[in-house]
Structure formats: C-alpha cells, structure tokens
Length: 317
Length: 296
Image (cartoon, rainbow over all chains, first blue to last red):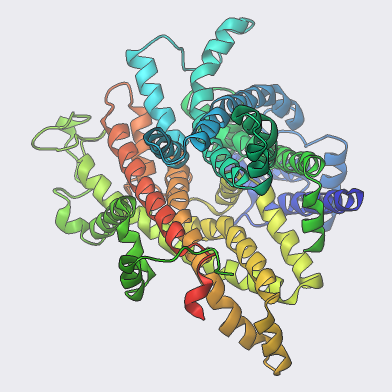
C-alpha cells in the first residue's frame, strides 16, 4: 500500500510542476503585448516598461518559470498590477466564501443523494425508482446556470422567502446562511442526481454478491444486511467520487457566484478575465487546480484505506 | 467475455440482425431521445426555412415582449424574435458540439492507442499529460485559454476538443490494456503481425462501441459548456444567437422580462436531456461487456 501511495503522491507532484509551468508560460501564448492589453489606451512607454518589470516579462521564459515557482512555493502569487495588492491576499479574502458554498453543496448532495440511491436500490424497477431515475438524470443533465437563473427569477421576484443576491449583511451569521441556501441548492443539484445514481448502481451490484446471499440464507435481517454488510462496500466508489466532487464544485461556483452576485473565486476570476488581468487569472486558476488535485489525492488515499484491493489493481496497470 | 448475455428472444434476435441500433427503438426513452436529436438536427439544417424572422431583425417598439401571436416566444431586449434566435441557436450548439467531439475523439483514440499498446515510458508520459490537463477543472481550463486566445467560435471548438480528449484517451487506453491480454492478440503477434495491424484490425474494432457511447454522452456536456462559456461572455459573441448569449442578455434584463431566460433555458434542458437519454439507451444496448460476441 505504501508503495502505491508513494507512486501516487510522486505523480501528483509531477502534475503540479507541469501545471505551474504551464500557467507561468501562458502569458507567452497571448497575441500581442500583455502590458499593452492591460493598459489599453493609457499605454505610455514608461508605463509599459513598469508593467513588464512588475510582471517579470523582461526576463527570459526559463527565468520566469523559476521565479514563479519560487514565488508559489513561498505562497506568493505576485502583485496585482491594477490595485497594487498582493494576489494571494485577494484570493484568500474571497476563498472562504467559495469553500463554504462548495462544502455546503457537497454536504447537501450527500444528505439527499445517498438516501435516495439506497431507496432506489432497495426498490429496484418500481415506479418510484423510475421516477427517481428520471429526476436524477435531469438533475445531472440540466446546466447549473439554467437552474440558477430560474431560481434567481423565482426567488428575487415572486417568492421572497430566501434572499438570493449577495452574501448578506456582513457580520450577521443568520443572514449569511439565508443567502447561502439557494446558491447551495443550485450547485448541489447535479451532484444529488449523480450520487443517487452511483449509490443505486453500486449497491445493486453488491446485493448480487454471494456473501449477501450467504448472509440472507443465514437468516440475517434485511436491514442489517443492507446497512451493515452491503452499504459499507457500496459506498467505496462514492467516497472516491466525493473527492472529485469537492474539486469540481469549486469550479462550478463560477456560474453560481456570477448569477447570485456572490464574492468568491468565480467572481474574482471572471472580473480578472474581463480586465485581462492575467496574473490574477493565473493565481486563481492555480489555487483552484491545487484544490482539485489535493481533493482527488485525498479521495484516493481514503479509498486505499477502505478497500485494499484497489492498490493491487492499480499497481499492476 | 460475452457469457453474461441472457438468451435473446425472437424479437431481439430479429432486430439484432438489422443491426444493434434497432434495439434502441425497443425502449421508449430511446425513441424520445432519438426524436429530440432528430428534431434538433433538422432545426439546425433548415433554420432559415423554419425561423419566422431573421435573428438580427430588431423591432425596438416591441422590446422584451411576452409571447404573442406575432412573436411566439416573445422578444429580447432589442426586440428580436426569440423563437428565431433559438432556432439559429440550435445551429451554433451543434456547430460547436460536433467538431469538438470529433477533435477530442480522434486525438483521444490516437493517444489512448499509443499509450495502451506501447506501455512503458511512452504510456507514463501520456498519462502524465492527461493528468495535467485534467488537473484543471474543464471550465477553468477553457476560461484560461479563452482569455488568452479571445472568444470566438473557432477557438471554442479547439478548446472543447482539448478539454474533452483525456476522457477518450483514458477509456481507449484501459480497453487496449485489457484487449492486449487476449490470447488472439498473442496469437497474431506470434504469427508475425505488425503492431499497427494488431491495433487497427483487432483492438480498435473492440473499443469502438464504448467510444461511441462516450461521445454521445459528451455531446450534452459540450453543448452545456459552450452555452455556459457564452453566458459568461467568453464563448460565442453577440449578435450570434448562442443559447448562452440569449441567457446572458436575459440575465441583464431579467427583472423586465423572464422570457429570454425561460426560452433559452428550456432549449438547453430539452436538448441536453435528449442526448443524455439517447446516450443512456445506447449504452445499455451497446454495453461493451456484451459487444464482443458479434465481432466473432
């Protein structure tokens, strides 16, 4: 197991190195001079030179990658050319809001999706199972921004029981939570459907295993078989998917935050994109990617703990 | 390999002779999915004939109108007919989705075959590249590259191809790895067949079904992403009526009229559901676990 984990961590580190190099070299793909794009009509030769220095564009590509690396390792993502603020500060100011939204959504998806999946697997091919299947597929398929826009119209105009715009009054925890509800539902919806289907499939598969038949023939009660023997194994694929979910949901906040005007990683990156503020785009995407990669790694580690068979299979391939 | 298959009844057998695709139509969901896809394709092809108005004709006097006999789905913020814009939007959705899928499909298959067949160091490098591309969530990857290249239809296609190819490469690689274990591959090799022949004649035909399923399932994802990027203002540019562009403009004016969001939203819901339902039926029919038999 240790061998597998070491391999896995090593390749994760390699991926991070490639990723950071990719992001630090991105600026070279930009057609034209980024400084000129940022400054627009205000571009004077002195300002351009100044921005080049600030962004490190006066150095060679290799030097830039190295500088970016050493900066990232020290937790420094550079300075925002527009405001003069540190980019890491800008990110860590809004990151908590996005992470709260992400975890709340994942929690909601787990709390709804897993019981629905268990229910379906327990009553396979009944009408309720079919209806649940239809809703699950719809939840998975319907784009989150469409749901978000519909909810925005419904709750900002007709039903005013949940506030939907912004974060709420600062310092007011209850107001913050009230503002969190609708965005959380919107972000969680596709994962509710996804988890319901996943749990249903894996649970049905397990219920066909011989050890379950053996348990049944021994006269063990159904609910004990289900919750004690079957569910434990059926949830293993779910756990590994949750890691992916944690990563993907953070990226999904882009739409939700834009629609509900919430400060966060999504709004930060979109504002930076609109202003062609490449260093901020670079920083935000790096943090999201690192979050994504570590969530996946974490899920893999938990998974190997839960199911020792995994490392054998993966070790061979 | 195909031992799990239940003994097929007569009807199934007859349809099977017509080709496996016949089985899709035994399932009501498959029929619904097919009809939606067929409708979308026809709408896209015959858009100029179906659309009651040109998608750029403005009628400022009747901006943000509710549906009426004159404008069946209402009008947008500059008085353009929403129905006509939706119809032309179908074209854009498919214009992005189909080439994107073709690009990611071919590059994914190619890389997956190479990685799976040769293994070793080449495999390691290819997997590392796939891991790196997938370490950025697809929407962020697309946004980052679009920021650099600028939003346009062509760039969208390239970026979607890039975002979706790792999925195919992984599936193909895994399938090649398991196909390589088959005795017939060993037999071919010992008869002196070149790797190219083994891959093209024996391995590729076996992995095609799963790749087709994956492609059908990916089309709604590509459509969703195109509209999403266009909604964020980073995809198709106005005045081109991508569903995402209509949503974006509807978002700006949502307090005055809900109709742009409702109509474009429903267009997205129906089309993505159609492709997904069809893809799911296709998967049940072409299940790779069962697909080996007909080849033999």
